[in-house]
Image (tube, rainbow, N blue to C red; front, side, top):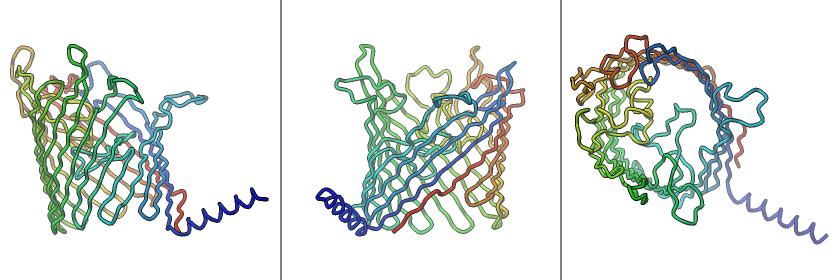
Length: 420
């Protein structure tokens, strides 16, 4: 009897406390299969090779919780390629991973702190982004403090990584940074948006005596936007300094885009990007090639991912001039984007001959259909018209038809919502 009384009393206390706070819980699901035909994707198709096709899939389960000043998010995900395990498998190849797992406390209306695995995404995601196109996405184990008065925001974050709960100094063997610190500030002044980013990344390496060292590289710059009913423009400029495996880093980036809404349905944009590089006959050990680091690079420099999507690092750099045409009608969106690529630095053959700087032209076409609130269909076709210069940089055959096509279904149902 006494035990039952204690249980009932505890239940009353819990229910009473629950009634003191407003609570929200939202549970939603994402199923996103994508079919791709790759025939010269990421690099020119090598002589004698044939293209390939596959279907990848992302499955995510999101839990979003909020109670007064406290909020939390937990996201489980599985990424797979259809057929990567037998139909009778007892275990999955990739398993289930935690994409996001963070808790946030709002000290007041202007200050908040968040800790855990989280997405760090800012501005146009050129330097720091979610990389949502990749089925696995990108998230960080970090601590972040945010100050957000009206029309302004300052985020300060830091991370320190280890291979496990070690008791002695242990090499960090994960292909990732050892330490990270950043500050991002944004101010919205009428139609003008001004952002400043300061980012430091420390990468661990062993010297000739196997002593563990950390070299720090700094990425810093500004991103400006100007938007009206008709005009949508942006300008970004970033520099990189510091060290990388004892080599001096000195690189920079500049990008600009001007868009104009010709009608309510049709918009045209002109853009240009410059990513510094290094002459192929430059014998210095300095790193002069800009690295977008954590950027959502698939969204830039062509959808065929020839540049900066796990490739083209420490290379001759890139100039990308492009035109973007967008047309929307009812539930459909269409985009046509030709890119014109050039190397800003010298491309030299093994025979010491300098090649033309023109790398080629890529044409991207995409379409999206909002079938229902929870279902979106999208697809695209891209073709690269490469040159002999691109052949030297990427290998493969520029005379081959190098193209890529894809179709994706994104299903995002809300499973459960609770609010009181």
